[in-house]
Image 1: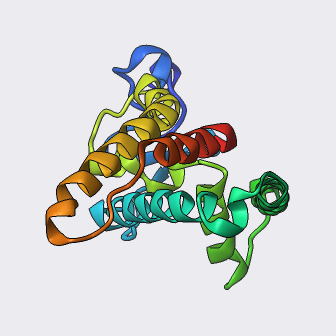
Image 2: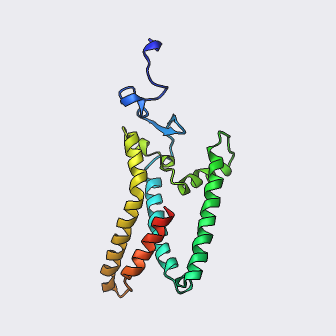
Length: 184
């Protein structure tokens, strides 16, 4: 009977070439790991809210009087790029199969979000049958989603004009979207 088993442990035998994990498991570093209690909609919502907050902050930082000057913007962009590279390099240590102790294990999990490792959100635990193509699609759609989200924020600021707030300017919105697109 064991000879008939085609897939690695905890893999879905009905999936094409065992490409997805069985129900109740998620893919982590090439292996199917049991879903934990931290899997849920709350981490996904928090990541999305943090992403929207980062986009709004980018709009104001990229278009502030200090960074409006080309040399200041260049220095800010280079500094941010160097910081992001350092954080991503540090997160590569998390790829090593070492048992990290607290608080380093939590820090390494947060670093995975900076490297756009969406697997840390355990999306497969939220919806059964998440395929490899779906995980790839999520990674590819992020830059397009960013531009659409900037457009929605721009239109939302126009609607907020009725409340007396200052709406976003179209050139500044395009500038911010391009800065984020460049980073992605």
